[in-house]
Length: 286
Ligand code: SF4
Ligand code: SF4
Image 1: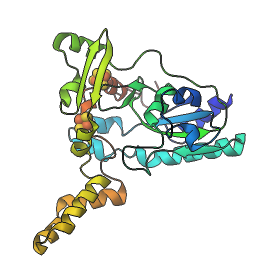
Image 2: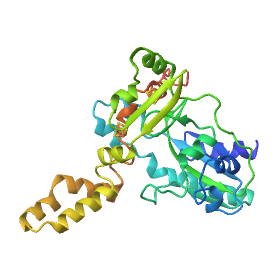
Image 3: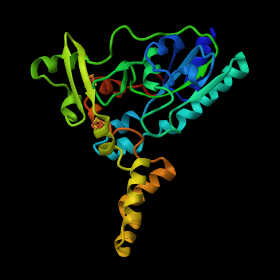
């Protein structure tokens, strides 16, 4: 088994659904200075990218959107997956490795774009919905990665885009919209031409306050409001109220939204296909 296969198989054993390898050279063609793998690890040659399912197929089908979002726990383990992968690369192959899951950072200025790394590792392509990467087999994935000085054979970007799905192209031709654009016209705009995305806009500044109402940003905003409230009774109600309690709970357990609300993907045909189970006969695989 090649080192590339061993590393990718190990990622899956550790809990990822898919793994791919990108070359630092490919990533650096697009990433600006200061946000390149070799800014994190001098001499970096490869980036191993892992992707896991945000939640289960059952949770995608729940009529209660809170179930779909509250069960998105993969981001809590994706750091562990790449930490183990980095240890394998350093201990078994003797190359430096840094793992990165973007989780420890806040704000919109990450060290590295995990989406760009995922694209360059062939794990998916940009989607019209919510600034995400869609994988043809697994739909929406949460990414984390290992930057390493180990030279590995890269998978490279996909040749054909996953988005738009052929059924979205038909909907566009008939109605000039797609399921994701229809679901969230406030945050999403785009245009298809010749079966490809001609242009798209993801208004993250609108998505974040709509979808991440219990994030760390919300905590700071609410805290300032509470501190500035001069009416003591009202301040007490704000501290013990349902909304601030949810924010504090989410900080303690990382149990609330960890990204967008993904309602724009609920009727995405790529995600529907990826989360539709095939019947498995009792006692064995099909
Ligand atoms: S994640 Fe939610 S708020 Fe953001 S674009 Fe999608 S539907 Fe809109
Ligand atoms: S619904 Fe999914 S496949 Fe269709 S355009 Fe939107 S993101 Fe792309």
